[in-house]
Image 1 (cartoon, helix red, strand yellow):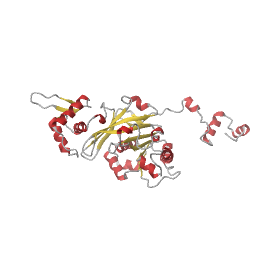
Image 2 (cartoon, one colour; image 1 turned 30 degrees about the vertical axis):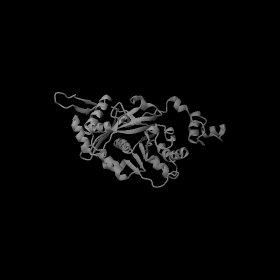
Image 3 (cartoon, helix red, strand yellow; image 1 turned 180 degrees about the vertical axis):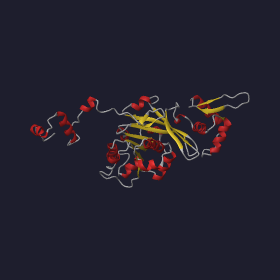
Length: 363
């Protein structure tokens, strides 16, 4: 402890080395002073394992007290994943904070209700923040009293711009991180920042839009999410979650091929509620290995409630959905099915003797 003599330590009762070290740590005058490594050596500092945003098998993707990102294209399911994680924590009795720079509180409440979170639990444990001006120093100190288990920052680039920084500027991104993410992280919460990927898949790499410093500064994990079969209010869908970075390394340990972390499935019901959750990856490829026609055929087979469809029924379903690409020719559907069969994404009865082949999606 600087400025204190040995005699003064004895007088104050701080000559015991353990007591002295504890007091010194509590009164560090600068972050440049050496930390006490004793607790880590003795094993008093527990190793952090991922415990939030769990898959169906119990393996989880988020580390408590660390910062994570989830990046993807629009309608890839980022917000649904984040709100599903919020719903899990609320059901456990924990508070969550949702800091949204892109949508309204009404949309968040609607989705939590769809996830069957009771209104009283939302009112008690869901804190929604919708900033309209930059955060001042100590603006977020209230989070230390709340002690949430999870903090979601929905709209990273919008948040950075609101603070007056350029998302593609490394220094600005670092200043934003210290002003916004650090106070949330100090509360002990797991931070999940939702981000956009760059438009070009070729130049995307492992990074979201803007500064690559976003990925380097994360001390938890960074994920990319990609729609495999689009979901809507009436049709189920699947998105694939892959690992871009996992600093502690525990997620890669159970991820398929050390890369594929989970499949996020959303299944709507007729009563306005949905089933949403993460599952171990089932498919062996990402959707960018399929041509558009094969993706549409796969989406149809993913959305139907029946066990199997004939090729004609698949064509009728594509036409019925009425998307902007129009119907598919029989040969195009056949080519798509053959490609999906080759990739082991679908299977077939084989048909024969005047009976049509029946097709279904593999799980």
